[in-house]
Amino acid sequence: MTTDDPSPATRVAARLMASAIELFARFITAVRADWQGVDPVPGRRVYYANHASNGDFVLIWAVLPRRLRDRVRPVAGADYWLATKLKSFIGRHVFNAVLIDRTGGGPKEAPVEQMAAALDDGSSLILFPEGTRNLTDERLLPFKTGLYHLAKARPETDFVPVWIDNLNRVMPKGEVVPVPLLCKVTFGAPQRLDGDDKDAFLARTRDALLALAEDAA
Image (cartoon, rainbow, N blue to C red):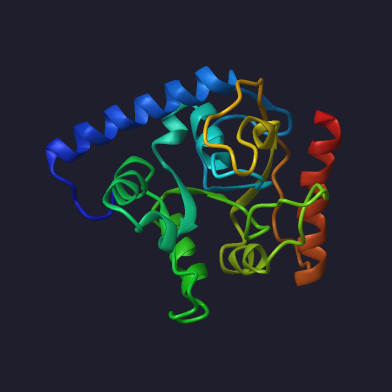
């Protein structure tokens, strides 16, 4: 489902593209899901994950059961996904992404408002709180404050940590052709804002994600 009422032909094309993307992702990575601390059931959730590759959200999206996938929207940069007609089609109609202005031209609170509106509409989100791809030797970059502000705006939302293992080796920086390699997506126990201040909540959610990384090592 998209927000701009696509034509029937566009919907058919989007479904075909979605199937092709899922098959390709599974063929290259043989990705599997490990639901450790949460069940794959409907609910208002923010799946927040480590970010080392442009294909990260595709793997999370691909391993979700279809009944969840149809209501999950990745949060992504508008500058990237609106750069070409093909990217715009995929971003808008295949993934129904929440497209965020990263140029700084819009109001500072707009990204949180966009994400909160998507949650209010019944969607769940895929979010990368590092804010950019991690190309360092550290497991995680410091979290941006958006995760906290979204939790403060919608405190009844479950924030589910998701660790993506091995995808940075499937699509190394500077390479065009993926290297086939087994990948795993691990889902941890949901976190909620519970009286934490900003620093405490970001530390707790980051620690929850790092704990999943330790289990995957």
